[in-house]
Amino acid sequence: MRKKLLLADDDVNATAAVAMFFESHNFEVRTATDGITALRWFSTWQPDAALLDIDMPGATGYEVAQHVRSTESSGRRTVLIAVTGEMPPLEVAARCFQAGFDLHVAKPADVKALAEFVILGITG
Image 1 (tube, helix red, strand yellow):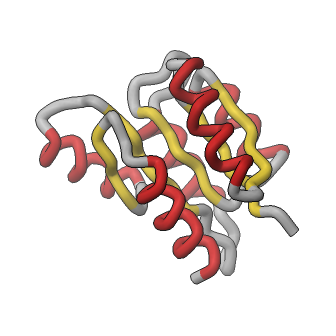
Image 2: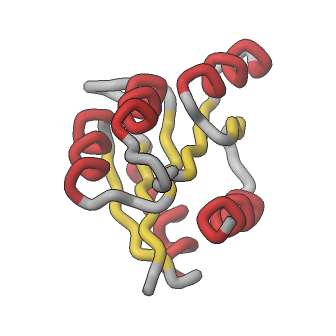
């Protein structure tokens, strides 16, 4: 069974490129260009992992991560990765971990390294 990955970023071109990469590695990928759509995907599709931009319209990546963590059932934990260009990096990373992210990555991200983290996070 293919693993499900949500990509949420308002940069449509970057999202499309990352989606193609993960699809070529046998992931089922859905995308969102805003935080509200990302939240809908979490409630209806339940991805195994998500790469979330921090600065999205509707709801920030922080808000999405906090909502996901507050609604997860025991035994199910979604791998959440913050991908952002926000500065300063150390303050942003601390805020990401407080919101419930598993990893904070600065843009532009190394997609191959992200894929390895996602695969390890999903398979345990």
